[in-house]
Length: 426
Image (tube, rainbow, N blue to C red; front, side, top):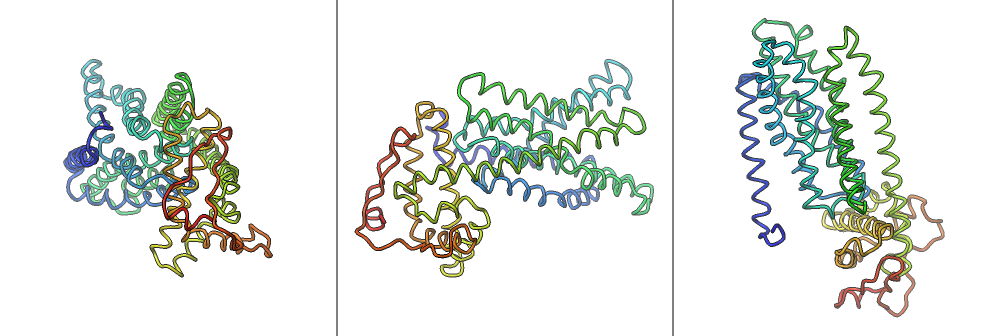
């Protein structure tokens, strides 16, 4: 049904949903914090957002996904997931308070047992939508890591607006000074000490969806997301319950659990990034031998500094359009490499769209090669990825269409037809 739906409708539905939930959650937060607290909360809550987004984008730069998808995930976390969470948490807490006639126990049970389940499920819904409708965009755990990070960053932003806005209204009513204010303490705990808390939880779910996207079989498709979601809920519950573990419970959980898990996931992120770049080099070498890429392009495409240098060189000679062409060329090449790696591991038969997607990516590479290839080759030499005597320019010879990798190597696509191929096939 989604495939038969017109493109504008597929765009309008999520935009309308995010707009409606965004207006609703903003008005709901403004009612709880007051107008002054609302704007102060927004200003302070925005501060940790750019560094978090930059960190997750850094991880995904090896094979960057579309910005529209990332912005959808951020908007879902900030608007839809936050609205679901605040309504469900309020309803559950009121119901528990009415059933137990003890507001303190209701708040404690709600924060430890209800909030982790509701909030992590609401954030995981964005990952589920991407997994169902844009599964071809998920090429491994790194993509799940990134979209989960953007979703959780959006959710944490809205939650910080609520907490910081309420703290400011409390300080305003008491006339508290800035240094001794609840606002400063709240900002320090949520934006300085633990800005990674919500992303840390949801990344576990994202890793599960990323692993499921490249898995084969129902068990490998369903199991990892459920396991990741369960771990996210458990870690979230432990974090929320730390304040109930005694005077030093928060510091104990922070130092003994949150910091080690953060360091573990940070190391995993660096390792995943390096592994992806090695996979890009290995898989693109096959296309280079077939003539689709130059021999100097492969090491440049597998090096992030070389890619940046190639964009700078292209911008110097051809302006921003040339730099964008290099960026898109590198992104398409990395996607092609990861697509081929997945097909080699699972077999082309498990991905019915493999040949079509490979053909599309190869054609897009061929259209931009005249602009991107010289810049990448030059960058490879300047970054010392190739010996200084290496000549990045191809030797003159009779133009020949590129060969395609053998079917046994998970590719059997013919070269694109047309003048662009025959006139540039060196």
